Image 1: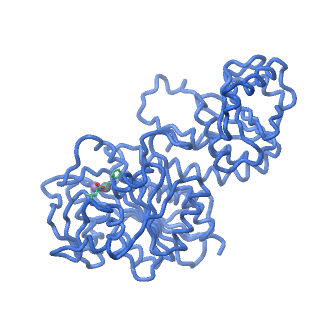
Image 2: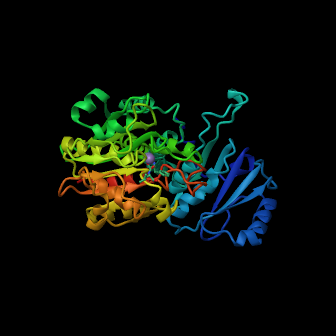
Image 3: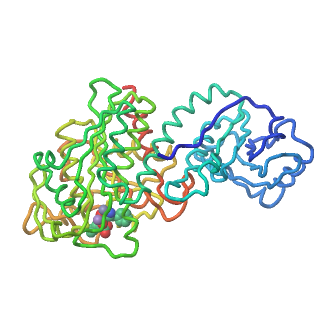
Length: 489
Ligand code: BES
Ligand code: MN
Ligand code: ZN
């Protein structure tokens, strides 16, 4: 997997800036004072830069680039504006401004006694992500490996908190890699293998194959995958860090490719449907982070891995399938497949693990993009405390999330003439009717939330903390939620 850039912390030694080769960044705190022993010519250049129009317009978290600064060996010096009292989000943004400009070099970050040095480092690592598995490299040996040195007041204290941040960054990178992978590589089997490899970290991982899925009665899930050459699978990952407490269950939609099936999608943009396993990707990333930081919580992650393809054996519009719960579903549109997968995995999660709460994540509907664009995931819940927990965790981590409603009149839109329900509700409120469908597979009194990440998993342009491509949206929010609500209780 793509590894976060190596970051080390050392004591401040201002003289080193003069001799450092590569790149450097100066974090300018609230007092605007430059570190002690800067060469005079450089001090003048920096002062001029900060007095310029661009310098004055610099917002907290933004950086100004000085090329070949006088008196230094570096090729660029970044001047980063970050007042001492800056927010976590601004500090991560400041780090990201540096992470976006690593250029394969050794970056020296002069952070002094800045209180947010840890968040600067996390932002740097996250924005420094580069998925280059499929780009040919001229010469493997000569590809420069970037590394980062932070000069700070208290390197030991920072290195400690940096371990948790590194666990988080690794989880986010794991998710991004999975989402960025093409579907000819990340098949259901390859996905399952990558999850099995996490046994190494102390996770219990079990792969449930088609035969057992059929025995369990997961016919809605199996129907989605029956047109594919790749076998459908459900993978269960368990992290047991809190004795016999009821676990939090995380459930992810893992459609490794969504062609739409017989209700085939238009060609334009279909290549993006390699990201339709984004929910499963987030669940996997969170489990990785929890294991890496040895979280004191019980969390079970379940992902439904299938491929939705048109074929002689594929399910048809009009088919009626019976779910594991026993309810029958009329398949109006084979492209509304995610909810069929989730219905069975959600039911299995509740039957098998009696969870304290269930949260599912899915790139479920195009309609959520119409509603919220690419800045916010849609959050649905039958439990206000759980919804608030998710929304405040998302706010704390700077990930956009917005609650959308559920209600009986929306539910009536998925009534079927022939079966217990149908799998689409028409154009109106498409994200809500999808959520209503899922809620039919949630038991009475089971706290549950559904997060539609179709808009935020793979937005059309770079975000604050991610280059263009997969964001890993949700790993930070769910890790925070586990810390705040499920750990140490
Ligand atoms: N995977 C798609 C939703 C999606 C769309 C994800 C765009 C990411 C970006 C989902 O399976 C789907 O096709 N949904 C349909 C549902 C419709 C047929 C009721 C949709 O949103 O159009
Ligand atoms: Mn679909
Ligand atoms: Zn889909």
